[in-house]
Amino acid sequence: MLITDTGVPEHFIEVDEWGCWHMARLEDGWCAALNRDNMKCSIYENRPWVCREFEMGDYACLIERADCL
Image (cartoon, rainbow, N blue to C red; front, side, top):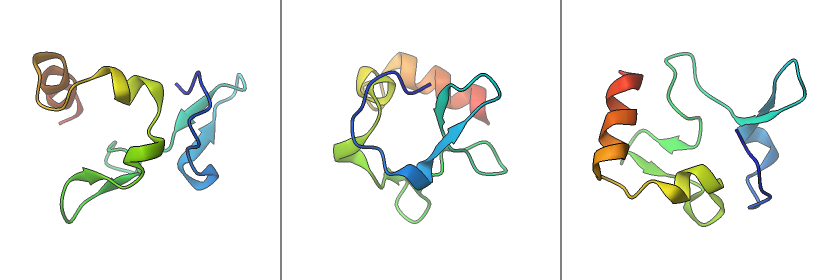
C-alpha cells in the first residue's frame, strides 16, 4: 500500500475498492515496476516507502519474494 508520496508514476498505481493506493501488479503477481530483463526496479528513485524499508537480499526481502513465487 502506498502511504507516502514518493513520486510513483500514476500508471504504476492501482486504487482498491476502499480507495487505498497500491503498486500495480502484473497477472503473475509481480510488481509492474519490475524490469523483467534485469530484475531491477524501473522506478528505484521514486519507489514506495515500503520498498525502501526492505534492504535488497536481506532476510525479510527473501521471505517476501518466496511468498510471491
